[in-house]
Image (cartoon, rainbow, N blue to C red; front, top):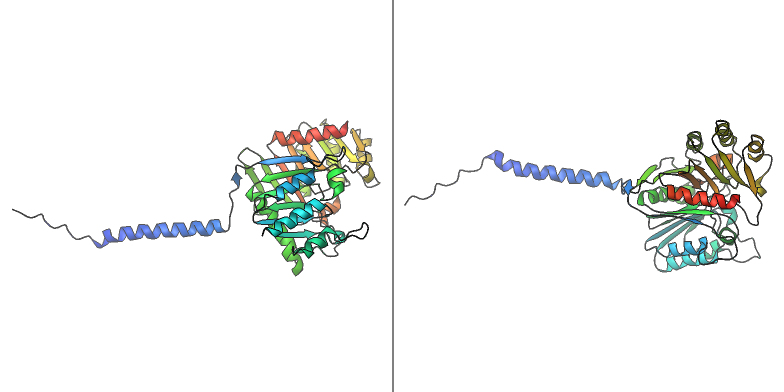
Length: 361
């Protein structure tokens, strides 16, 4: 009985091929890890958004910006970074302290001029946070303001808008807030916070680089992020105003920027409807109110109790411009500000149009 012939020995080439494939796969994996280590988040995500407005018709604790923010801070499990122009809200201070006590890493950066309480000599909320062990830094005695009003929760959620974390901000003044569940957007704001919190101590200015300047969510919402004064904010604003085809509506606490005013007047001359609401207490010789009125633009002043504190432009009923950024030269060149341009979401635009129509009537 013949035995089977022994298999021929493997050639050196055949032994090399599996090793080569393993080496290639390892290199590809290593490159991928290195690549994404520097880019921790994708730029397209399926995330949620919410829009809130202050309730100024009497004290409404349940639906106030204050109570909504307290609830959002309660979501934190890892980190809260807060850049606050002013803080006098007891519930919000309590929420930050509660988060700190459950081992959430809380950091606060604030405007130097607003650290000490100016009412009755009571301990300020900022001093109380410091006493509880929460790291707090300020912008020093700078010419411009640290005018941000944003929170980043767990490097995933962003809360920003015109709302200062004060009693008046929640219950007396007209304010707006957007809340996004988006890691790329949160990364932008986290970087801005770190630059202020860390670089300010070193006497260095903020980096104009934004990790994810233009983000698209899976529902089509497009968000462009800008930070003043390090970014060019006036060019994108002018571009959006000049691109208007159907309408321009705005709500402005302070509107003194000549170029922005002229761009709107030029659009009005081209038969693009332009309408606006100004805060009456901010009308002075620098305001764009009289120039627009003389041009025939239907602008009105809000003289109700409390401040009309919005900084909002809605273009063609689909693009929303919002943030901490007043329409002024100081906002462009001196203050620390944030500006969002939100496109592709008619529901967000409609929410702001509803607020505009409420104030107009």
